[in-house]
Image 1 (cartoon, rainbow, N blue to C red):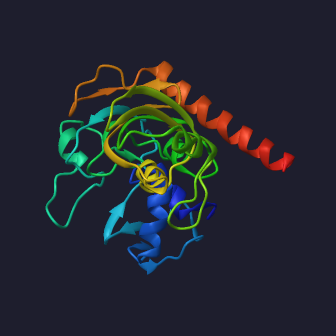
Image 2: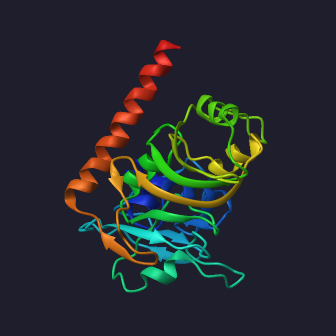
Length: 255
């Protein structure tokens, strides 16, 4: 019986996150039983043959989910492969035996905590717009941030595409004549959001490092290194995603 959406099946098979699977389908790279599929199509996980880029993907009914944390260094891009030959985060986890993929993104010039997993359901919960899981970043900006700029960032600012960000939590760590170091906590995952927020109020980001996702912290993990998450950390992430989605639904009802 065809009861599983193909993007969910791809995530469950550990191929990529559900959002990335949707993009791959839209690019026309997925076939079911030899025929191209469209977004929303379903499949039978037991009988149908799924192909991505003409490679057959088979479900692993005994899949063991794995969860890793990396301290992404600057200079690496968050993608599985790059046609331009640039360094990717996958180069740093080549020794992991399981096929895992990054959860969300950090741009090339950013660093800090990046999660990897083959658990498509959790990856979707952590990255989907309907789940506002908090993320904390340590941000160095130029010039020195004024009180008005910090208040604007806290209240939410309009980005270059016309969208307004949700309120953020700002804690000033250090101030000098020409720079400010802040800890910024946001509950969204817009593309390059922190940099765009700062640009919107006239600040330039000099350094950006993600320190935590939900209740899980990067800690003292060195740049370029990774470790497997503890079971308690995995459970904490799942609980945070569920709680964030519940709170968002509650706010929607109030509105």
